[in-house]
Structures are given as C-alpha cells and as structure tokens.
Image 1 (cartoon, rainbow, N blue to C red):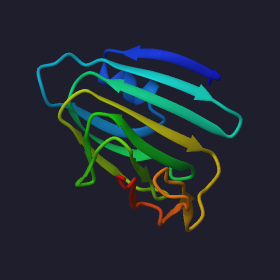
Image 2 (cartoon, helix red, strand yellow; image 1 turned 180 degrees about the horizontal axis):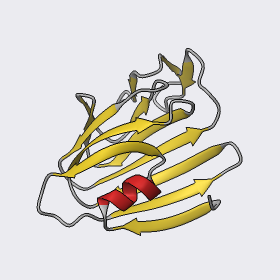
Image 3 (cartoon, one colour; image 1 turned 180 degrees about the vertical axis):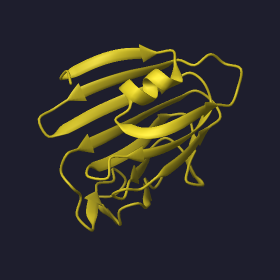
Image 4 (cartoon, rainbow, N blue to C red; image 1 turned 90 degrees about the vertical axis):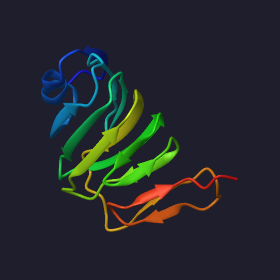
Length: 146
C-alpha cells in the first residue's frame, strides 16, 4: 500500500474491495449517486483514514479481527449497532466484532487502524476531562459536552 493516497470511488463494490480494509456489504438507501472519497495516510504502525460519503446507506462491516480499530463520525450522524453517534463520538471495536451502520445523510467519518492487537482494556483520551475514558473493547465512548 502507498504511504498516503486520495481515491474517489463511484462504485460501492470497488470501495468495498479496494477502499476499505475490511470485509462487508453496503446498500444505498436513496436515489443519490454513490460517491465516496477515501483519504489514507500510512504510518509505520498506524493507518489513518477519512471517508467522505455522499449518499445515505446501510452497511455491515467486519474489521480485520487481528487489528486495533477505532472509528469516529466527523460530520453528520450515523447509527452504529443501534446506537446513534453524533460527531465527537468514538467507537473502539472489539477484536472480530461485526458492525451494522446506518446513515441518513452525507457523512464524513474516520478510522484509525493498527497491526497491533488491543489489550482487554484500552484507555481512550477525552478532551472533555483530564483523565482518559476507560472502555472495554466493543463499547462506545462519548465525549461529554461541557
């Protein structure tokens, strides 16, 4: 993989096979044309990804079970495994977890992935408090509003 790239996908199957580093399926839920821009930065131990999606959709995703995987909505709201996540939320995925995601409008979201396995508990810093938010893998951690 290149260290960094920006790619625009106009076909959901191409995004699934080339743009995402996870297995899954995707169904568009409106008449809007599919278009997703994937911006990827590869670092020695981490990959940072930002996705800008133009069309609402339903997806079922399976991140690589051997990697640390953190997701977060940046613009727009989505529902992840039945939990509504506004921008500022963070999802720490359990190893081997499957994710059901629904969006109702265009969405920008990001994820951070590492080849290192996660431990049983991982600290996720919160900008709203000086101490980190301790979460179990697979649970959601939301930033508290001041």
